[in-house]
Image 1 (spheres, rainbow, N blue to C red):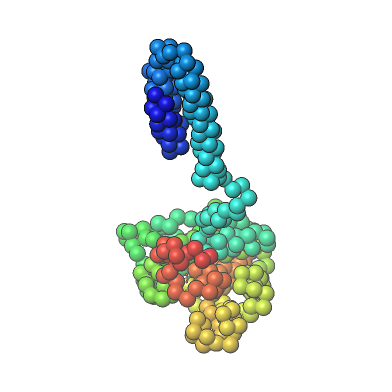
Image 2: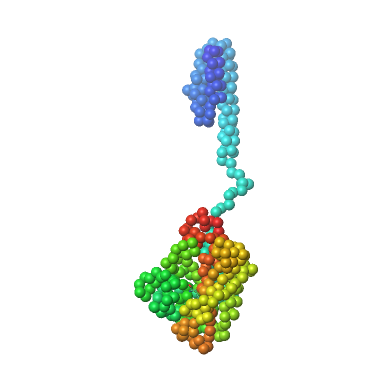
Length: 338
Ligand code: DAH
């Protein structure tokens, strides 16, 4: 009996030591100490022994029982502890850790430039006007002094929807729409999309312009020049030089083209400005008296100037982009840079 007890004690000790969960440990407790447990059976058998043997084995059995109980309690708290120390490493939350910056989107370079243009002109008292992208021939051409057979129409390869309806080739029709509905003084810019059948390094079938129009008593070409210089220096930097070349547009007389010194090479000459040191930025001029008459204004009473700048060209110069087409392909790797 002594041997059986000792074997039981040894077995129990080994089993308890290798238990790897509290569920296994509970099973062991039941199998040794439970009502139907092995040790319980032995203890129950003590009463059949002779008094002397009962005393001897009783003491031993109790000792074994206490040992097993103590081992189970010890193992149980060891298991608990390792459960929590494991949690501490696997589910730790380091509240002091710096996280990677959250990524947020941003406005397209054209939109950024467009908003800046509105801001710059708001500062000098211009209102922002707009008109439809699908436009009447009448507003896009005829009332701007370009009748159906006018040769200047050939320079603006037009997408026609029908004989009378087209995708506007310029923002200039907004001048007509505004003047038909407002009396002088007029001071507006009209940024927007325009469309022409063109596609190469510096032309896309859709591009952006902003029109400017000022009409009041006594407006002169000096007002036009001052406004263009203010706009170019605000957009491209205060050291930007501006020059005016004579040109021809049906809706202005006299007409000018506006160049800005290339801000990539500071006017020294580079690929972007085709080694000229200058970039063509706008068409402009004094509003043609016929255009004023077409909208019911009296050219004896008021005069005005107008201009049309390319927004995309300004964005390209501000951001140092050499291929216009990149702006409209929606490639995130490209756009994310701005
Ligand atoms: N609409 C012209 C173009 O797209 C640009 C232009 C020239 C606009 C002279 C004007 C202007 O308002 O006065 O080529």
